[in-house]
Length: 361
Ligand code: SAH
Image 1 (cartoon, rainbow, N blue to C red):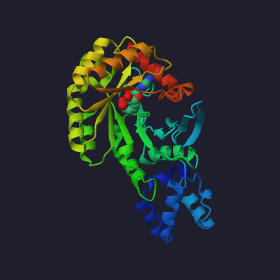
Image 2 (tube, protein in one colour; image 1 turned 90 degrees about the horizontal axis):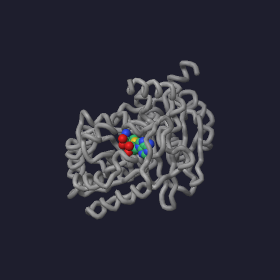
Image 3 (cartoon, protein in one colour; image 1 turned 45 degrees about the horizontal axis):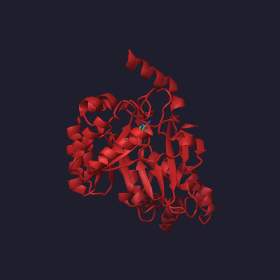
């Protein structure tokens, strides 16, 4: 790749207003901006050439000045339940993953926000090699666009979960403009309620998100009913503590009127006993919340295992009897390593092994 190509801005870095400005500066008639924007976001074009009603000269100019896709598809897996997973190679040869999950009445995509992750959760493949960098807004939008391009013409995107690689609230500055892009009415026109942002629980950022006045759905990865255990499995908790997270969650509910989801990964012999379930029920009692229990996906390099189905059933039962709304997450794409960070892992295996070695010594 030569330097010129590397410096070309991505089409996905431009909002509709930016694109109008871009046209204005080049004496291109204003309606072209709308035409191009519709091609990309509504007509799911995947190249300039697809924009058949644009003059060839304009298509050439677009191609010279802007990059369509910055990433390359390193691998594209399709599971037997039609879950599709992309491993994208970025311009600096780093990798991220994103997933499309189909259900009869909904099509959900899962997107990444960082290359790697700094949070260090002990069961997670994404953070094994630490954090490399934040994704740009264009890189986040491009993942969405690439997944939308995988849909059949009659299929619509219904839900977005920001649960891929990285900690979304540690990259709010680039994530929020990407989500704003989703809302643009002449583009995807996608409602904020159908976007779920999953966080390890960064209280200040949760408050900041609440104050935006948007109606995003917030999910908090709690994973333990007390600080002693949470410090072990979500190491970043040592600096935060569950109380501060619950206070921020209450603030989110008061400010936005949106119920917060708590995610709880079930790890065999670690946090899945009946006692843990009772303790979790006590912790969340009285809160208007949903508890989403996540069976752990196996991660190569890690010896932790998911709970048995019986343990998961007992756990959910205790929570429900205590009056909480609790569900066990369905597994999608089990035959394609859909656990997030799993596809990228072989690419960063040496770095990951080194990190694990340092942690042990
Ligand atoms: N950093 C954010 C979002 C990315 S992870 C967060 O912590 O929420 C999205 C969800 O997947 C989190 O709940 C995370 O704990 C969970 N997760 C990570 N590794 C997993 C694994 N191996 N199996 C099942 N869930 C996992």
